[in-house]
Image (cartoon, rainbow, N blue to C red; front, side):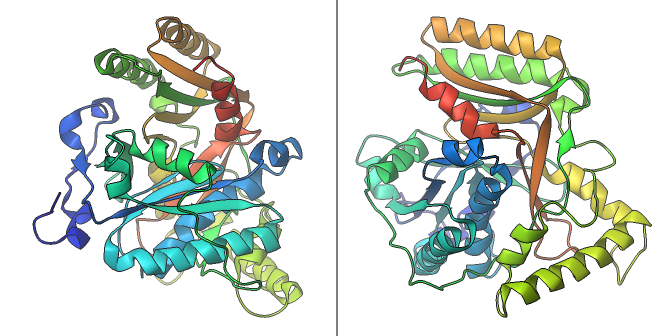
Length: 384
């Protein structure tokens, strides 16, 4: 498949859609060019890390993949999706080597600084299509500030499974290699549920499921959620809680480059104190307006997405949780879908803000007590 104007311009040429309810419309999705590659990454034994209450480290590792590749590409737009304990993305051939180096460096950093093991792989789109699958991408705009990628076609799921089999692996960079994680932070505190519980949701098609029945299921689920206050968004209108020193201080210090860890800790402590004062008292600094930034944080939060399956982190009432569970159980009984749910009392946010003066800063949402990774464990326990 060729793309008019060259494959490197492909993603920017896709129109942004705004209404999440139209997510399953095939017309919104465009096939990736044949010469592109898919990057996939995940944390090995993330369930064990979560059992050790290392949720925040797992989330930072997943977001680090996106941050390092974005910085390696000089801030150029590319399609990506955050998966809690990992991430997926796609790149044009001209960006392939930079993405590979960023992934390799991130895997080394995750091992050395976070004491976690990350698998990373780069899979040619042509290899996916050789399996009779596809990788199609759409752009959903949760606000006027930015868009997030949505993927369909089954190719992303196949690429992830291939990575777990050890195929298309990207070797780790030499010890001591550090990725450029500029803009990656986690200064906000956990976000407690306001409506009852935080529900992490994963829904994928059952093997051999009727595509029309699966589409109807996803549309039904979205319709249920859309009727809830603010569509179940777990980030309150006033933004997440902010305290000092932030709970993520140590993790942010480890994302910095240069100097001893002690010096990086001291720098982050000082900088986050300055940021806390600015935010706490609403002080405008050099074009930065705290109230505007917080509004953008809320609007830009990535709490629902589609990557060969529906992912959502919802602040929902017990009534909505029951309705979703009943609809999903019926779909599973009818061999339409497999699903995983995980209930917890709070959500968490990991931020990628290369510039606080721009409106397109990215805020990844996950459950704070296991989130997507625990929902995935529940999904895997279901019959195939």
